[in-house]
Amino acid sequence: MHNKVLGIIGGCAALLAAAGPCLADPVEDFYRGRTMKFVVGSNSGGSYDSYSRLLATFLPKYIPGKPTIVVENMPGASGTKSANYLADVAPKDGSVIGMFNQSMPQRKMFEPDRISVDVNKFGWIGAMNASTNVIIVWHTTGVKTVEDAKKKQVHMGALDTVGGNFVYPMLLNAMFGTQFKVVLGYAGGNTIQLAMERGEVEGRGAVVWSGLKTGWPHWIKDKKVNVLVQVALTKEPDLPDVPLFADLARNPEEKAMLQFISSDSLMGFPVTAPPGIPADRLAVLRKAFLETMSDPEFLKVVEERKLEIKPSSGEQVQRIVADLTATPKEIIDKLKVALDAAEKQHESKK
Image (cartoon, rainbow, N blue to C red; front, side, top):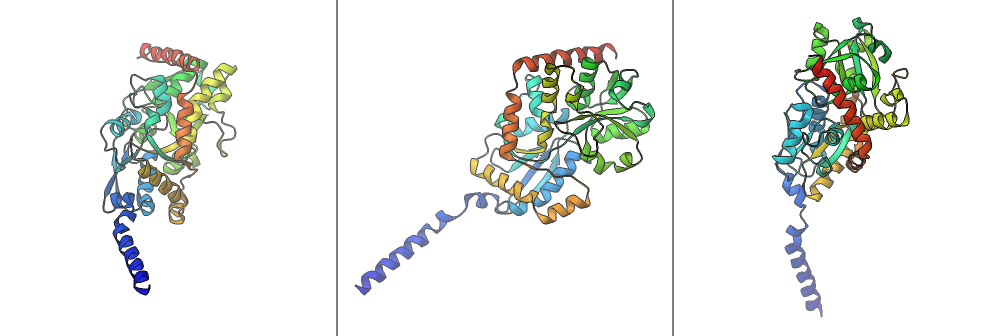
């Protein structure tokens, strides 16, 4: 009997030893020693770049296998170039992640022919902040409100005809009679702001408020810019007297249109993986993202750099994107009419 018991124990030990490799973590094996790429859909020095590089520094700590993450800037067409790269070119294995303009879901609804990616198929990892875009103009213009902008032409800088820097001022022109004139061709947000300081243009149609406070605090302190509108669903605590986009609405239909425009504010600085990433790796990246957002060392750096972190989980961002893309067609069509009118106005004033 004694020998039989020993034999059984020995057999079990052998089975456990044989099963050892099967108990290894395949996700950890994948990431161990790997160099990941983090693609940022903007030029260096701006808010998207700052948030991306900060995340890339701390995220590996929480990914099994602790890979290295290198950041690559890929500006172009307000984030569309990087979104196309992630969707069509990047490996779909979890080795490449990225961040591009949070307005991509709306733009997909407006311009499906120009935005070819299916935003619902991305593996959304999370969003770093509930961000508010603001429309700003230089203090010397004397324009302090939307009403003022109806009486005086203001030159606004933009990259091209996609993205908030063009869309928001042009929508205000079409719906409310403001006189913004958009100057195209700038390489990025910081470039527009330098042009404002030089007097080349007088404003910018979409800048993240938290990023402006962090990167250009002297503008706020010295009152170099006037904030005309907040593009968000709720007001920033330090901008209580600046109207939300939807506050400008004169009827329920306009309110629905402007709330749709503002609804991406809950997915500020979104982090995503390409479509088709294995589910187990996406789950690990989502978990690592949330753990990073509460990391004491990470939050210490956030405080030192005067950044704002109000994270949303990957699942929350996925739902926001799904809700945005489910907006009734009649609302989108009316917005398209307004934007088409704005673009025609822009062309006629060249």
